[in-house]
Length: 259
Image (cartoon, rainbow, N blue to C red):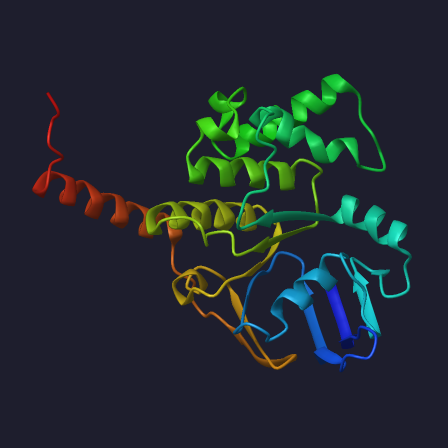
């Protein structure tokens, strides 16, 4: 079953007397449950607009969009917000964590806006479990400034998962991370996908696309290509290799010990 079904989607932006901008031009796309898809394209290609529409942050100028079987294109802003809260989790390049709150409180936040509110005890239990699922059970009381970049991204992923979405949308999730930490995040994504989560990520890094199952390329508002990845690379193997390379570099070039 298609969890995402876009049919001849157009998106046109206009402001006053300025010329219209055709951000999407007749995009049709289906994504089945359990797929792991990368969206690539240069600046202005339409990939971010496409992600915003899939994430119910915006609606198309024309065309039809079914999300998990529910029509989106004609929903009101409130209706899209409700559907987004129930169906979609978001991960961003810049983490977007609240700096003065703990990891636990950051993960709890989406549950405050969910249409089906849960009690404080269940909210805490679910947030703690989400942090445990991303390997941060022992960091629940830490603030973002006390966490590494990779740990902050894991908190952001836990926050995206806490409402148990059908789809995870990730916008350049490794863009602010070093190569090893980026591979560790992709390892986590592969594990989540193996557990059945549908994942779409926007990236400009060809290296990241080795780990997904399908690659979409956008150009000038159109879907230029749509190709499966026959044998995705193992992020776990990439992490092991990069850790060994880093350990070897540290042995060969040890840091000086300060007096």
